[in-house]
Length: 359
Image (cartoon, rainbow, N blue to C red; front, side):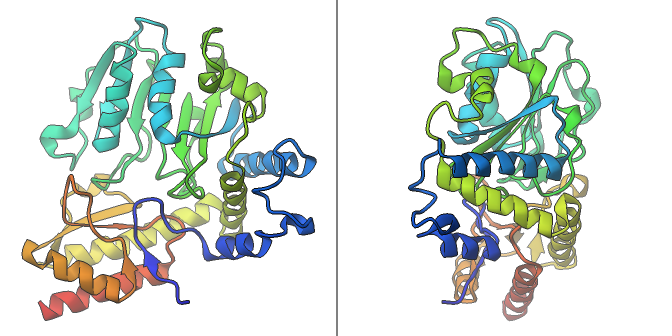
């Protein structure tokens, strides 16, 4: 069966080499006559996999021993609540920079648990830009400062991280982790659900500075207790073993692609190829301010919205899947995460060019 080019925002495409290895090992992992899905997470083989995957991720991102690395479940949505619940005292305020849909969802969950200060909200800018730094309402009493590195709906990305020193920096990197080098030591906590660049849905990576673990109240339930999860090697309960296994294969694949530096160069080329074509066309448009454009998600509109249906139908017929924009913003969106090959981007641009010519 021929593979299509999958531009879905998530769950997203996985590297073909990873899928092929998972298929090869599905029935007999390590030649032992059982699948990794059937093996005990307490067994020597899976514990070795878990420990090696953590070492691989630490090496890829330059994560020092000052940080714990956790492999959790519950996606970013669990982290939206878990972070304010455990890193801020009851009654202590938390700062949120809102630059799109996911930042708003994270702040809405935090507001249920702790006093919320919206540092700035780009809604008036239609989330096409980030409010100017001089407009931010910063204070010195926050437990942490939260932002979303990449807004997948809007195609807006913040890189490098904001220069904030009044509180630990907390970041949702669900759609950017492993896409480029990051200065981990500037953060208090980073979290990322897997189904963009890290692996399949089911595992969430949390990188948390160890001193922040001491903030977790003693009476915090186990499932929400970073300190206890870290002490248990992310195995307080049965982890998502298959998702963790596939993520471990992805880590090795990224290392083989030149690491995160190699991924960054390729991701930059892919994004610029699409943006350059859009900017040179009167038929397509991207409305995000150039300095905030995402490498991971490229939203675009057609000059005539009546052609949207034909664009989607024709693109799928050409093996280009998942280009429909989110219902909240409409239009089209090409998600070009790590596993999207440059051939897929060339196929997309070629199709866009031909569709424009025929329209």
